Image (cartoon, rainbow, N blue to C red; front, side):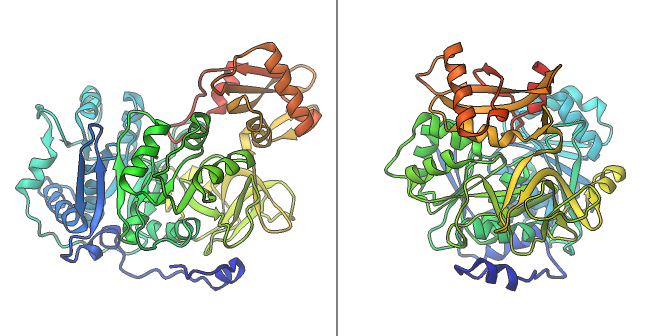
Length: 536
């Protein structure tokens, strides 16, 4: 969709959306490459070292067979199908089968417990679930509380009473399935927010959501696709990042995807995986990059062309480490489940300002606004707002009209993130609206303090929150995970405090420091500051 250039202003000014009247994700991301040439779509590396390679032709045929199985079992257009799987061969087959059937897929994270599963399955009214053996163990305990749920398809292990074999259903069905007609605004997928405050909300997206992601993915990946490109991300395919920052945009462009399900992220194993399979393009969340920096990873066989990151701000220290380690610039992006990838960086288009989220993606009108949707002047703090409509923007919060209504003001989707736009047009993240610390009359965002803490040689990860203070209203507290070779002590805490005072500001240094082995995080790698605030 983008024409390669080194002129950002020209790229942004000349961009126009091309949204066809008939658009289906299954056709766009799979079938148009299934031309009989056996073009590589997926390399799946299992935990035992085995590798499975599937072409677009095979993925297309398998998803058509499963679409027929769903139809035989009585699912009709608009019904919801949950995909309770991690990175796997079966996951994209299930989603594509739903898309081509006019069904609505619902990705679910495999680490969800029974309560989290019950809420999402009940709220979505899913009639079928595709899962593996471990998922079946959880679902079997709550099935009697899910009256809408008709069928559970299990991808592996023994076939249990009340379950169906995913692969047997495919084997028994025909590969002949005509994809239903869908317009770009027809519902395709419900992706639940990570639920950092209150119950998670289901962002209902249309088929056009794939098109909406393409400009940013292309821009941040140095104009994907190029010959030899191969994509990988450790981000789980249960979230918008794994699905629409990586898997489906890669397939839209015919770029093969590497899949691998790891029990946990191991930095050196990640380097070996990238070297073994010739990965060229990666989406590495900030948490993964911090863990790799902490482990001081190196591998001469890793030859990356582009690195894309987002979810938490990186900061100068991490950006410099990435360039020194991989020889390419990491391009930070910004978005959220409800409207993703609205800001991006690309060092060939404009200089990267460390800590900045970049500039608006071509096709997106992003402004700093107040709660009424009124645009704020440059360098003034406000809410990051995205002008509606936009192909990447959700249709609504599923079954939640009140929350949908409050998400918009004066034609802008309000992200709920506070930021500023500087005189050069760069956007800077300040905090979530509910993360702002009010201390001694100052309103302080935690991100800037966390960036400064990351510059200290002892700090591997940090999170900053406000805790009650009788004099200042709130005092600044930092939770810190140390790098190997450093030991927690009062002396080190004081050293870190003085470092922040000198590097940042006297009123922004953490008056309280708590050392920890880990930080509480959402499944997508964002620090759960509300949990830290609760610990005091």
